[in-house]
Image (tube, rainbow, N blue to C red; front, side, top):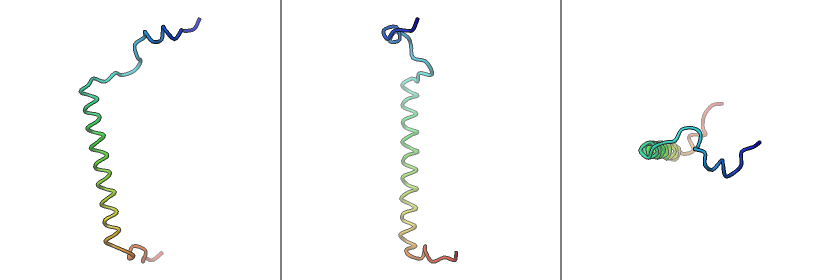
Length: 60
């Protein structure tokens, strides 16, 4: 009635299977996004340090 484990192992995976070139492209894109995010974090941190405590002196 149900599918046995050995039969499931023989079936091909469902969904999209990426080629090696697509996997490499995805990894490079992910690294570029991570690097850009890291640069933004460092930029915001540097600006905060440069401004100093004046960041907190603002009207509410």
